[in-house]
Length: 423
Image (cartoon, rainbow, N blue to C red; front, top):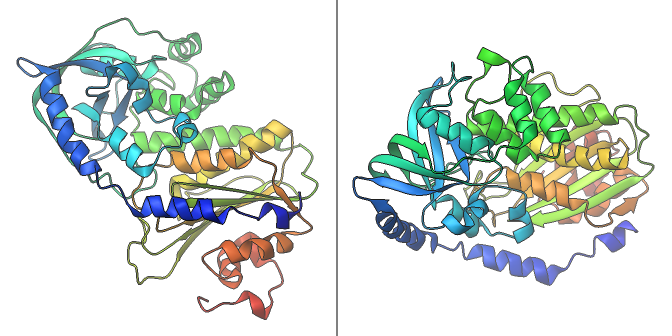
């Protein structure tokens, strides 16, 4: 498909999405009040809560003594699985308000716990938490609580955060059923000589999505024997994306290159993604353009804030400084696509975070937006320069400013017309 044809974006649909996002759906505040009513109905006698748990949460504050929690969607036992973050949320087309409503419906029953010495922890609260993490479906639990939950709407502004809802200190926890654990997960638990990276890759190869793997890692169920640790949820998400990405990068290392410049686009929850694949050996770069009024650039008077990180054929040797978990999530989506085709390429991902992105929903939306960008046939261009010239009118910064931030774009010959008033 010619790139000009591909860029014929349905403007009316985009305008309607912007209008809906602008409403910002403050009905979420009413939802929190409804949660308290549901909680009162669900709790029995001396604060004994019985429900269904689809997932867990491990905090990172005060590491290595962290808060470990069992998550339960109060009043939603019959559809508990829908409250666990997954690729299915993209398929549903959830809104930002939908995500906040699901997250704030999850009661986080928690206890403090040191992260080490957990490899044999199958009793008590920590044991129940681990059983929930390794099961392949939501598990019935009974939790003794110390008091009422604390309600806090502020989920934090980190893109990779997994905001959860009301929190309550747990005295005890018991299973209400025997969880079903898939055989590949049992295998990783039983093999004390398997390092965490190898176990993660094995589970991914056996068909487990990264969402499943990061929960199991977070519960301290992967790694060599006594080296197993609880891993804060925020860290486990990025660790799994990075580890699986390295595996896929190895898979395409000797693959033939794509034979033309390909351009793909996707838009979801106020984020627009452009993915450009260029013939050559593997390189990757993510450039983020965060508009004034979006969650990380809230000052309406500020200019667009740019961030970028990249890697060459051998990958990165240091921490991702500017784009954090979004880097590994977007790279994963690109690598999965290339590996499925048996090809390699240089890949440039441009992310425009618009003012419509009024609340942080988590890095999953980056991963799924890039994964699904390849669902439709992309556009084709003669060169990277031609591709960027065609994309430039849709970006919130001038091509000249993009070139000064992007290593891939900076090698192109600039013209006076590339520089706009924001340069």
